[in-house]
Length: 224
Ligand code: B16
Ligand code: MG
Image 1 (cartoon, rainbow, N blue to C red):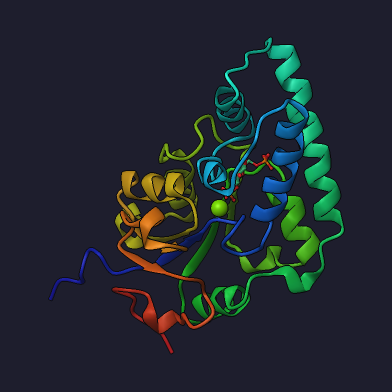
Image 2: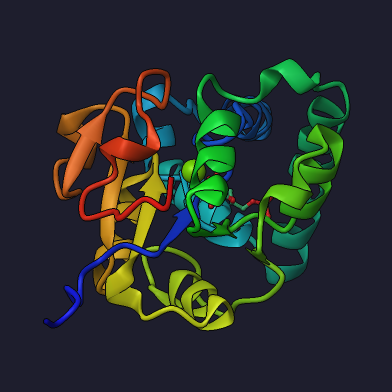
């Protein structure tokens, strides 16, 4: 008998907005920068920044205001935004891990699945360190390791390859439209966390991980 090729053997988790509520800190820091430039950054605009690299996010904000700057000026702006973000993150408490996230990471591991992080953030490792949850990941792929940020599939394909698992045996948890697109482009199943209006392309959309257990992962074969 052939094993199903789509048996899910690995879970790849986005960080901001999936494991920890840092998405709100990215928003606050970008909003502060945007407001200084006379640009209004709404919650709706912010959806376009989720999962997107720091410099690409700045590009989207500047285009909202119809502004353009030299590369050197843009790097200074992005550095200022990052300093504000890091200040917020350094004040974060371990209870800011999103409900259900740690339990799901642990349950995946206990059931023989591989677990990876797939985050566009260059701050991902320090955030995991602050929360003391690095040990829950077999592989960590972050914004320092990739050339193309989401919606490009590079981040998830690198995660699968480092785990040594075929992409069609991976499932991705994402809160961003760009992240859902990246997972699907990588040939992976994707569970969207948030609103179906935003994440409708995902195979399944749930509000958060609160009531989601390892048994709810489609095509998973549990070892317990
Ligand atoms: P940094 P994720 C993404 O992380 C964030 O969603 C996005 O808003 C941010 O711009 C990006 O990381 C880069 O972050 O400035 O810290 O390098 O959602 O892919 O975990
Ligand atoms: Mg995210």
